[in-house]
Amino acid sequence: MNPYFATLVIFSAGLIGLGALLSRLVRGSADFFVAGRKLGPGLLLATVLAANIGAGSTIGAAGIGYRDGLGAWWWVGSAGVGTLVLALWIGPRIWRLAKENGFYTVGDFLEHRYGPGVRSFVAVLLWVGTLAILAGQLIALAVLLNVVAEVPMWAGSMLGGIVVIAYFASGGLVGAAWINAVQLVVLLTGFVVATYLSLSAHGGVSGFFERIGAVSGDYGKFVGGGGLHWRYLPMIAPAFIISPGLIQKAYGARDVKALRLGIGISAIALLLFAFVPAILGMAARLDHPNLVNPEQALPVLLMQDMPFAVGIIGLGALFVADISSADAILFMLATSLSQDLYKKHVNPQASDARLLFVARMAALVGGGIGVLLAIVLPTVVGALGVFYSLLSVSLFVPVIAGLYTRAFGKFEAVAAIVGGVSLTTSVHLATGGAGLLGLTPVLVGLIAAALAGACTLMVRRKVG
Image 1 (spheres, rainbow, N blue to C red):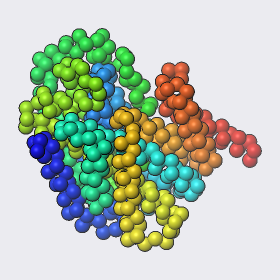
Image 2 (image 1 turned 45 degrees about the horizontal axis):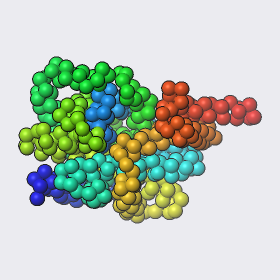
Image 3 (image 1 turned 135 degrees about the vertical axis):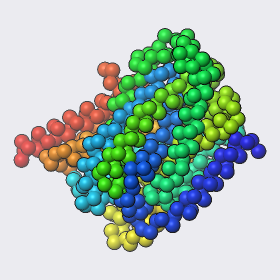
Image 4 (image 1 turned 60 degrees about the horizontal axis):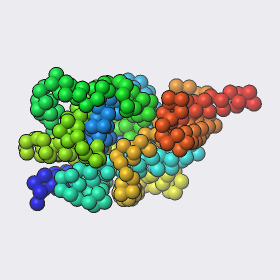
């Protein structure tokens, strides 16, 4: 068996075994959904950072770096900016409400502010978008296994899905937090060592940037050039400010201090880490300028340009990055379906044990659908783009307005969601994703959502 592939198989078995062991920590739905609200800054840092460093932050970002150069920093850096806003402002405010009212999901908050109709509408909408990001993580795993051992893409997606579902469904958030801590050590070690060796192989930092300057005039630019660069900020940052998965992890904090410290440090780490996939993608461009698929840049670099031991660690880091983000997505799927849909509309009197069973089954079903989508969707970045767009335009305005003003009611929330999603979709289809007047479809949608909510508020006040 290919030694790289054998290592990933052994690591997968270890994750599944650890998940089964940690399932003993789950004594009820509170442990599964919010880790009993006992996460300190260390575990919160680990689970948030591990969730944020996934397929898009590694394979996807390195592919952008391979194609566009240093401007790829903005793909991951934008997530870091959004996470910092969550740590300092949105997270503490919504945590206090969650503690006072027993919230488990973002849907609980939406019902508290706007009523059950908004909660259910958003839950259905987000299930569609969340499945897209899960597919993106599984595509990344499939790309990795394809490069490492020529595993067919469809089979790689299935294998990745089995691993994630098996260990997450056992332990929920309390188990995932401990597993994420282990994953984070492997992840950061692998990528830091790979970056150091890549820079050294090209004459250090100065030699590296001298060489990439020869690729094109824009390749070494932080802003500008042919890529989206800073325009990733309005597309990605809002999704990380109001991500249901990240907010729910914030619910698990033991207090506001732990929340600010854990999520804040993870945001700073993400801002620094953003340089890593960009540099590795550019290094792959120097050594392998003719790759047909840019998203193969990172696995190819680790296998062909690194010493065997470093390549093993690097591939392990890449594997756990994708796995850790995928479990965060299953977390959103499982809790949303069980809390926002099943308990609310199907069985309001469901026992704690029944709710826990439904959450685990939702992870199983959602994971299966994610696998099917991964086989159909063409790229990691394309799959993640669907989710980020849908998440930002549907949730950003209702969540932020709901936290900071009582004037914004259910009619304004629905208007913001419908207006934002409709215009984003229309602009994307009409322009092929290019945007309008220099604005990305997501930014157009966010503006439309804010205007729709504000206009509805003014009309309601005049009529009232």
